Length: 256
Length: 242
Image 1 (cartoon, chains in turn green, red):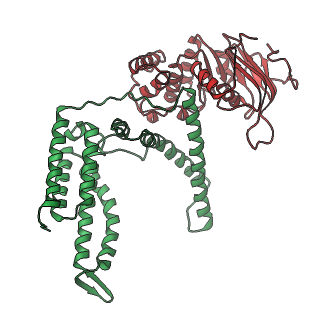
Image 2 (cartoon, chains in turn cyan, red; image 1 turned 180 degrees about the vertical axis):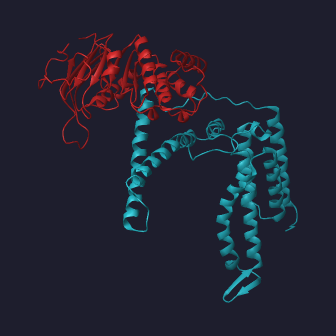
Image 3 (spheres, rainbow over the protein chains, first blue to last red; image 1 turned 30 degrees about the vertical axis):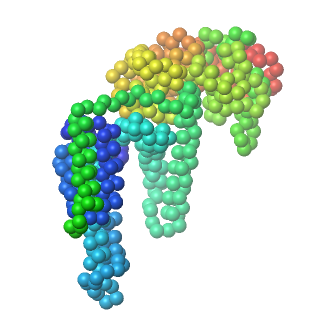
């Protein structure tokens, strides 16, 4: 079985049954709102909302945690650097190094922000199969070229994964063992180059096959979406929540 | 000669940067109603021949006539591709839509059929090939044999008058091969098969020919026998083999 999987896209929860177009729109709105927010109250509310969504989607928490761990491993490096370099009131000193209160607060803000956004994307976007995602984006009138790029990338990702494993096996059966030497680097460079050349060839062949079937630059989609009553409610609730976040961020005197 | 489905006249074709041309003054003819097998060693130009017919490659010299009309420009070949179907050697090249039904309906939609009709044609074609129930399967998750049969469905859904098959049996098990043989035997259109498998050709075509740089040498389909080339250089009269 392939290593590329979509563990969150299968399910029967309320969140899974919502129209993908609504979910994409709401996820984009919240991502922008939270990314631009600078207020702890806003971001904590956003985080709480994202956790509510997560609970409603009923996703396997262990897998969600694994994804969050990946994101937070990047953020860990921010904790190493940012508090020490951000100018402000010194709260902690070690030799020439000093951490500032403002720096700590700022890093905390980024951590919460990123986690809230990722949880929202996992619950609203990762619950849509990639194929449906492409079709929904097309339906939302995003540029055709971008949608095709997404769909084709996804379709051929599997083929290249297979090809990559075949090449890797070809290396292994001839006794290749990665070491820190020029031979290893050269071999990996060949591997990458071969994959690139093959994908170029593949693209050429796919295009030819499409021409043979009368492709003239336009895709005609068979997929239809249906906007239901539950989608109305979801959109209304999300807009209210977004308005509340906006109020906390811009109209409420600072709490944090 | 004028009623032949395909006529290639004095074709010269070389790949850019190649040491020598694949075809030099090459002549070929496919009369209507024929089921023809093309054989020959690797690199002798069998696939190139199919791609020249479809206009995916352009010859440096010579003329191509399809259904009695000369084809030269991309516009001419666009019309040819509505009537001639090509089954690629690698099914992964052919199937690019997420689901099977979308892939099969892709050709009919390009032909300008309304979605409902395209869907109907797609379902009908899949039924005919014994693929009902595959509609919502994901194309990349199909097995090799299933991919091949679905590819064939995508081509047949365009209701071609002529079918070109490029090594259709590569990687197929005996069972799928038998299914393919039955499908081809039931087809009412002319087809051209490139294959290395004499056994498969014995069941699907009435005549075979051996592709050379200058012409196609007809030979009786005898399994396991290496054909002896009697092809002369610079054949001037097109299709005199027939």
